[in-house]
Image 1 (cartoon, rainbow, N blue to C red):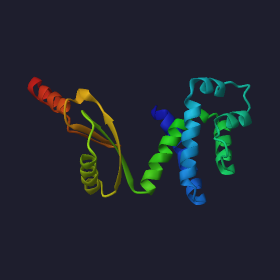
Image 2 (cartoon, helix red, strand yellow):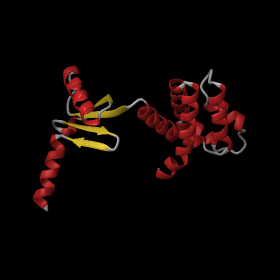
Image 3 (cartoon, rainbow, N blue to C red):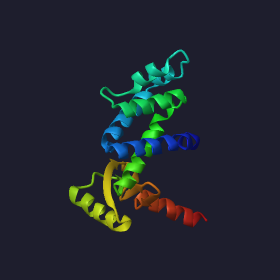
Length: 175
């Protein structure tokens, strides 16, 4: 996985630079997400490995309808380099660059039960103070947490779940 990220990073940076220069970051984001999803389909992934598939056909296979010329050229470069299989990593890295550019922290809050709008807004405000950036929250529910929540904001994970506290207490007692 880390090798795929290493290989994808220069492509993501180049794509982001072109998108920013064109003023079409949102369009590139959507196009990359579409292409990554198509390329991740096992049937398509198998086709992309077929040496009989031309680069042009590979690009047509993964490109969204109405994609711009620069995006099609980008896919062509990936095809020629045999890197279309990296589209998921390129798309993810592109989104990271986009978040940095827009000074947005993307965080996922996983809680034992559904959080109310008021609780989410309170959490968003606290994370905004902590990171000094706008915060985009995604939510998930995992009843196995028993209570509390786990916040995953990229490099920062805050485990305030009852399950996590019990695990830490067990480790402290066992050690």
